[in-house]
Image (tube, rainbow, N blue to C red):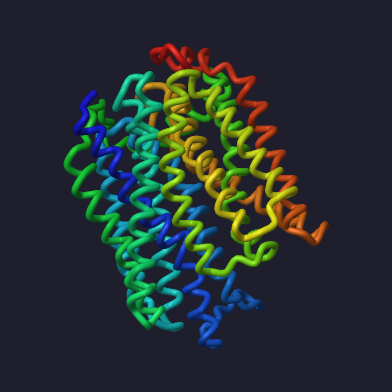
Length: 432
């Protein structure tokens, strides 16, 4: 293993998590809604309808995810038989970071459309770069070290994203103009992303030489490899396909809990915006600790059993929230428990999937991993929303989310991961 290259790979998580926390989670959505609300004429027509302020940002997210769903598998297939994996990673990261920097120019309602287009570009580039970033994992280390390296990546990502968010919160205390503070924060996320991408992965990741196809046949070979991959996953690699299905289901539950937790805390427990941001910041650092802690557990009992334990933990978190979470003070302990399971579930799932990916097909498999995850991420929020409609209570609507973890856990328990690794022709670690 090349430790310099591994450190460069790990630090990309540190770099891009600033976009996820500062832009996606904390500031951009409310900021764009506020700009539209201040200028009624800035509301955008959509046929006979008007796009409401709170709906504009979710629509932008949807457009960017749809673009990822269409293009990322093709880009992944292209990267697998060219020498472009590193160039794609650095290129998309640079484009996304620059688009994020330009979000700082969005200062009034007239700039909202421009800001939405910039976010669509940045979020698409973010997802694309993650595909090629994840695809490096099977090449960096043997199977027995991949759990540890994946966990380090997630831990550094949570710390990096949390650190910049903390610095931006200090900025809000210093500046009287909140809008200016938001714009500076958005630009800082882009600069952070760009600086650490060029400082670490740009300088340290190695270009893997592969047999490059003729430029005249690139499109044909790309489409052919992508179609072959879809057929292979169900025929030659059914265990990798079953694991991917399990991950999509329980990860949808994870992302839904993260999404609706703020709604639950605000409506049921009365938490204000400042308290919610403080909880989000705490989650970043506890999630980093959880990724490292459960990696130690995985080293003793195996990654698959450890992921099952974290899924049982998610079920317990939801049951506790339904039956016993009653005061704002309790939210901090509840969110800390959630954060412990958050980092470990995702980090170990990534390394488990990496072990079942066939050699020379890492990018296309991780493109499916990325777009399938995003393509199903609407199901959990839909279930929660319907449950709220039927019961009138966000608290009661938490219970149906347990099904995502029950079904995902059942699929994972019945997946023969060891055979899945053998199917892919990869070395089998002592513990799985």
